[in-house]
Image (cartoon, rainbow, N blue to C red; front, side, top):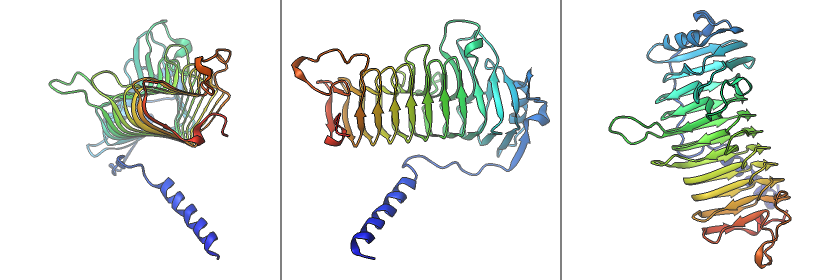
Length: 364
């Protein structure tokens, strides 16, 4: 083998090892207890007629202290989101791919199918969650979520399909109102191989959180109430979101931005994503601090491909393919004869925004 070929193979191997390496700062879920319970043993029918919320809760509450797995066979399970299925620490909710959790109609502004609140070491996998968007009994409110994670640590959500929720498909954030304590952020959260489609407010919201990975997910057709983003990283005042990775994801046909970073957001990497045909910006940054946007395809968005608003700083843009954006505003002319602003627009008040030539519109 000649030296050039050996060097190329070594580079490919090193690259594959780097791609397979765990993202720093996210703890692996520890082993949990070996108990395995079936929701049907606790009265769940999965016939699409009976309210199965109490049966789910009974199975979860019956796990021993060291935890274990609650299994959900195939079926259509009606869940009352006003009660929520409340998970506990050290458990795996393992759903058959043909399992559907169907939210019962309600008029409440806050209702969650699955609630993970102040928990540790929880895994949720498989199955579908179907919201009550077409069956909601009121016209107001925006907090009817498929999965709500608040103030929890070492959480993994994977191989889920979440659709038609009145609010978000998934919301990850902090927990306030703990006596004498600052808001408790969620930490070490992994969301992978998840599809969030047709939800009303957001596909995914990331609020007050630390060390979140979003891998190989799709966020599609979000819209109905603002912001309507595929992914919205937007922590409430009194906290922030830090160390976020969005990698190998698809954000397409959302009413707002494909991906939005909105104030009090730090250290975000958006890598190898396809951000296509959203009505807003492909990627929108407002007062976001520090990160990398690399290797993404950003095309066909109604506003700009990437917008960097004032007070954003210290972002590195490289190897992005940006083109064909701003169909809704392409007829406007920018003062000063600037070109490419429909695809990439960096405000004068943004600081430390490094745009390599490989990310300038029209290059590829």
